[in-house]
Image (cartoon, rainbow, N blue to C red; front, side, top):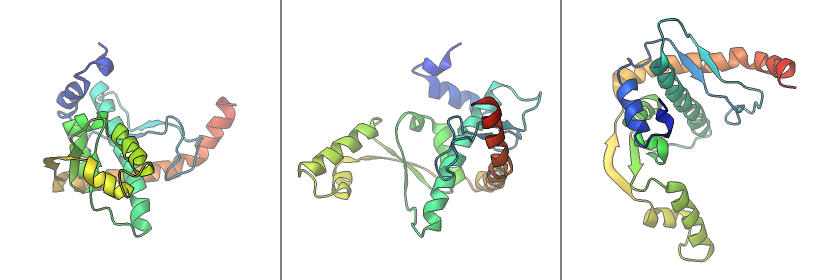
Length: 193
């Protein structure tokens, strides 16, 4: 069954993944399949499934991957906040935004409301805005965004119980990277040179 290429893949993922309890199954995924660039500048970092056991199956791993990707984004959001940049709004767009479960994960892990764009091709809208600024259609990128980016009315709110669980899991996620970063270099030297 090749669900990755199905037009309904996010609906299928949502149906399966929603059955797994939030953060209670013990798997944490470090999503560094191509190294990591932000917030850790570490091209030797590797992907890791931590906590895998015989009780786990495909759906547990899918959910762990989804959570790991959002944890990596939270790592980046924390850098902005450490720099004094307040994150007032999180907007989901593109393929992953089609997943209701993934949007809820983002709300819970970021502890912020998630809005969605009306357009699923927001990267193209962004390119058009930049071009519009370049030729004088918009005064600035901010002006272009106000005029061209439209949000859906639906907002996903964090679920407090999930926020608490994910905060604990996120700390483990961060510790895992710190504990493994020296080994990433050793593995890279031994197996990838």
